[in-house]
Amino acid sequence: MDSERLFKRASKLFPGGVNSPVRYYAPYPRFIKRGKGAKIYDVDGNEYIDLLLAFGPMILGHANPSVVKSICERTENGTLFGAPTEEEIKLAEIIKKSSTIEMMRFVNSGSEATLHSLRLSIFFNRRKKILKVKGGYHGTHIFNYPSETVDEVDFNSIDELENKLRSREYSAFIVEPVLGNAGVINPEDGYLESVRDITSRYGTLLIIDEVITGYRTGFFPFYMRKKIEPDLVTLGKIVGGGLPLAIYGGKEDIMKNIKPSGALPQAGTYSGNPLSVVAGLETMKILEKKDYGKLEKITKKGYEILKESGLSVNIETGMLSLFLREGNVRKFSDVVNSKKEKFMNLFFKMLDAGIYLPPSYDETIFLSFSHSEKDVEYAFSSISEEARRLWKEP
Image (cartoon, rainbow, N blue to C red; front, side, top):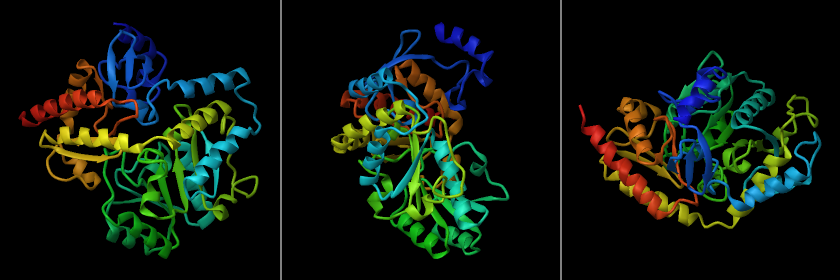
């Protein structure tokens, strides 16, 4: 098997043989050679319906012709200059027009965007502590882990949030509007609106992390549906069109604290690099004209099929999670209290059936505009049937 052979080589070069831990699964991961539309193909010639979508960015599917063309044209004219380009302005203008973001800074990854938004909140508010929700993932940096400077509260728990913020020692509360790295967990009615009110009351900046949700459920950040205005926002995945690009931004009086207009250092050689910017720009132009109703329709179809398993299912447009448990999932502890140990059995069964799921129970299933109703019916019927069988096993 070519994947096995390549993994043996990779294991001598990279920790665990991979460059991101969620790509690994025993005995070795499939090495992907190419993708087109809703399908990916491994080096051994196997075809899969892709429900991973690179952990979310590929909302148009793989190798979209217009995006590929824009990247090729930019490549012919140079790939990196260490100087501004007009395309940066064009992409930023689209983001600003479709959100409440007044000023922004381009970076290369969601982890960078969340890291710098947290640094900025500490600098701006002169408070050293950060508050996040349990199960909320905001990148692999120090602020991601509970410590003497980071505390956690349950998602969807307003009372717990207010009890923490009363101390007025937190510079920021960072939250995904829909949890995505604990599986999909939706905000309850009024939750995000209450979060905005409470953070304002105690002088804590509200950072809404839209790395996953931004432009996935509609042509806007998710928080726009709730008619609230965060202090800072992070975007990633979709806005880069499949290339490394992320954004943090928000209110102008906060963002102006970053060099060169302010005193807070933050820089990056590849920040706003032309290839990523043109890929993101073309993707956003396409999405602006897309009917998200199609994506909502196939998501609901997947939901209805998965519910036939009798297990818990959460969805948001283009995002689904099947939990190996019964009852509602509204916070992280509900995810923990499930038969997580059975998930990899489901993953490998689906791999054999030509369906590529996220190789981790805590990750989200994603759908794209390239998925057909036939793709959804086959994939989710297979998942539902196997999940029901696993659930009934002792």
